Length: 454
Image (cartoon, rainbow, N blue to C red):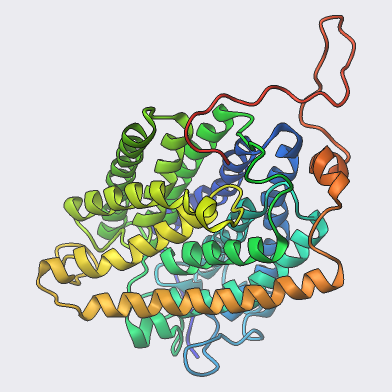
C-alpha cells in the first residue's frame, strides 16, 4: 500500500492547509458562542461546554483510530477503513520531520500526511458539536460526552470514509459514495450537516422535549453572542470549504468565492422571509441565515459558478427559514434548530448540485440546468439518503444504549434550576443588586426578539 507516499511537500500548499485546519478548529468555539447566546442565561455554560467537550473526546479518538477508520485502506465495499492501519497515527511520523536530510515525509498529495490528519480531524470535531444544539437545557453532560464518543466512532468515522475523497479516492479502494456512486460532496454537506442534523432529530425524539415547551418561551439570552458566533463560523468556514481543495489552487479560490456569495444571498433571503412573514428582520434571523447559507454551499462549493451559488443561497435561506417552524407543527423540541438549519440546509445544497453544477467550475460536472440531465441528481439523492438513513438508525441505537445505562436527561429540578448549576456548579453571570450585594437565583429579563423563539 502506497498511501500516503514519501516525498517533499509543497511549502505553499502546506502553509495554507495548516491555516485552514486552524480556521476549522475556530469554528467549534464559534459554534459555542452561537449556541451559547441562543439559550437562557442559566444554560449558557453547559452549551459552551458541550462544544468544548466535543473537542476533547473527538480529538483523542481521531488520533487513536478515527483517522484510520475514515482514511485507512478499505476493508470491503467502500464502507469502512482499516482501524489498525494508522492506529495512533503509526507510520505517519516517518521520514524527515526535523529537516536533517532531504525533507522527505509521508505526504498526502502535496502536503504532509499529518497536516491532512489535522485538517480532517477538525471536521470530525465540529460535526459532533453541531448535534448539541438540538438537546440544549436538558441533557446530562456525562451522557453527552459518552454519546459524542460513541457517535463519532460508529457514525461519523465510517461516513467520512464513504464521502470524503482525495483525488477521487479516500485510499486505494475506499469511499463508496465518492468512488462508486460518484456523488459530489466537496466539503461535507452529507458527512457533516445531513449526518449531524438527522442525529439531532433522533436524539431529541429519544430525550424528549424541554419542560414547558412550547408554551414557555425559551428566548436567546445574548444576541450579540449569537452574531459573534455566526461571524466566527463564517470566518472559519473559509478553511472548511476552501481548505477542502487540499492545496492552494484554482479550486481553493472558487470555493472561497462561492462561500461568500451563497452565504450573502442566504442572509438576504432569510431576512426577506422574516420581513414578509413577521414584519421584522431580526438579528437572530440574520445570524441563522448566514449559517444556513454556509451549510448549503458546503457540498457544492467547487461545483457551481456565481449564479449557482446565488441560487443555492436563496433556496437555503428561504427553505431553512420556513423549516425552523416545523418543530412547532410536529411537536419535536429541536432547541436551536439543528434540524431546520443543518439537515435542511445540507439536503438543499447536496441536491442542488444535481441541478446547478457546471463544468465551468473545478469539479467539471454539469447538472440538470446545464445540460447534464438527471444523472448527477439521482447520485446526489442516493448519497444524501444513505447517510441520512444510516445516521438515523445508528444514532437511535447509541442514544438508547446511553439512556439505558447512565441515563440521558438531567432530573426535573436540575432542568428547572438550570444545567449550569447542576452539571458544572457554575453560573455564567454574577448579578449584583443596586446595593452591591450579590443576588442569588436571579434570572435576567429575556432578550427581546420577535419572530422565532428557540
